[in-house]
Structures are given as C-alpha cells and as structure tokens.
Length: 240
Image 1: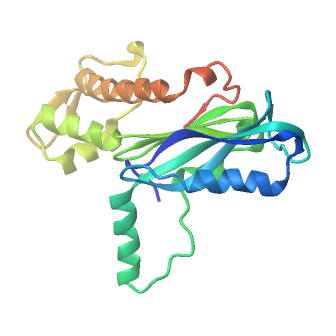
Image 2 (image 1 turned 180 degrees about the horizontal axis):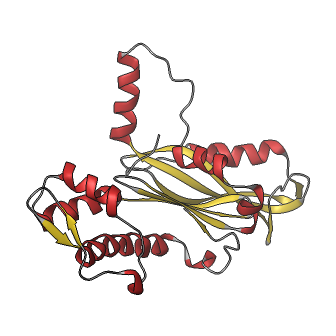
C-alpha cells in the first residue's frame, strides 16, 4: 500500500522501573505493543519503525540486559487514512481474498534499491510518480521520516496542456518526447519550434521553461520534507 494518505508521526512510550532493574525482551515488547495500540483520529497504524530506546539518559538500539530505572521507546509510526484502509480491506473481503499482511510500498522500494551502506550512512530515497512523490529518509539503518507529496509527473502534463490549450493525452506525448529535467542555457535554441499538432507549434525555450519550473517546485518541496536534524547527515545523498 502507498499513496497520498500515508504519513509518519513520531511517538514516545515510557516505562518506569524499580532502580537497577535489568531490561528484558518482554519489557521491550510491552513498549512496542503499547505503541501499536495507540489510536489516532481517522488514521490507522500500518507499520512502526523503532528509532531507538532511551535507558535512563543513554540511547541504545538494543536495551536488553542493561540496568535502569526508566525505559523509553522512540517510534516512527506510519499512518494511513482509515477510510482508505477500510475500503481496501472491504474490496478484498468482497472478492473473497484474505489479506495475510500489508506491506508499505515505500519500505519495499527501499529494501529493493538501497544498499546497507546507504541506509547506514544516511540517505533520502525520492520516488517521483505520476500523482505523488514519496520521500523516505534513512539514517543508521533506520527509517527516520516518511512523507508523501501530492505532486508528480502528471502535474507537468497538466501544465503543458493548460498553457498550450491541448488535450492531456497530446501533452503527455510531448512531455515524453521533448521533456528534460534540466537543460543548460547554452543548449537552448531560441529559434527551435516544437510541433504540437499538424497546425500548431511551441517555442522550444517556452516548453523547457514549463517543464523545468514544475520540476523545480517538486524538488524544492522534497528538500523541505527532509527533517533539519538530518539535512547535513545524509552521506549517501538523495537517491531518485
């Protein structure tokens, strides 16, 4: 599952213990269960990524076996709109197909294309689709942030269609044939005309401006989605 209704939200669950209590796996499981049982208005928890555990004042990835009096679990909950979640389940129920498990498309994509080194050193995986752009931020092998923007390549098609007063199907063909994410100024031919149909043409530099302007907007919004605490720590860079 994926789409525009997916978003991430941080959550903290705390458990106070007797002084010098040794943390067990059961205690960790209790924190995880308490987090998964959180309720959000109009949202359903699809997945939860453990960020780290705070054992007294020390952060640990695995707190089992450490003595403390306070155990804190930091989680990144991946939420989906309940309406979409319920409708999806209802569709499969009606079709008589039982759902074994739902997988988040951005996480499956990350497991497919990112290396362990990229996840560990920190990176932002940006998936630009037709209607949405998904941004997944990884650091120290952990998903730190996930967001979905309501922008995509179809916005470029609509811009071409509306500015040139043509059908979206024709605009899509032009985008695929002539569109480019970036063109050097020296490579722009101001005299070149691109055919729209048998009768009409558009200046090449105007077409380039339409495409690049929308792409710049998409990239700027992507950069705003990367949490400030990770902007200078993504050694793996941005992966498209």
